[in-house]
Amino acid sequence: MAPAAEPRAPDSAVELVGVVGAGVMGAGIAQVCLAAGRRVRLYDIAPAALAEARHRILAGLDRLVVKERLDREGRRRAEAALELVDGDDGLASLVTGAGLII
Image 1: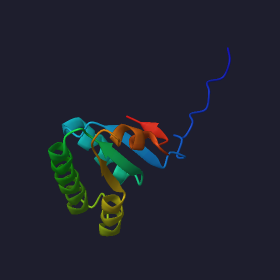
Image 2 (image 1 turned 90 degrees about the horizontal axis):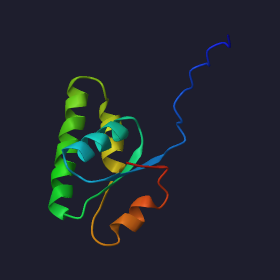
Image 3 (image 1 turned 120 degrees about the horizontal axis):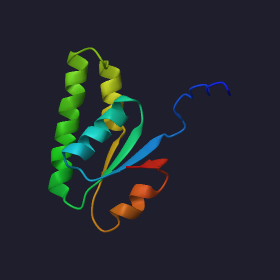
Image 4 (image 1 turned 90 degrees about the vertical axis):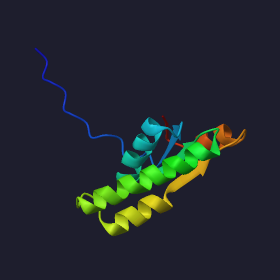
């Protein structure tokens, strides 16, 4: 019987994650990626959805600071790493440079 394969560490080469859809799930995915130190480009066709998602993401990051799972500097970096994209050209700009699209 062959030995079991060694577990691999996740690929940390992904620096920019593109997220399609700024609803509850998209905002949650974006928040997790930001907290993990990734840049995030969040796309939605509706600017109002992006504004609500930004509010939801920042509130979630604030909760992580209160729970001491993220420090204030990490929260500041996460906020700076969030890019919101809307409109017809948004999907094209979403994929440019992204190592992962969700």
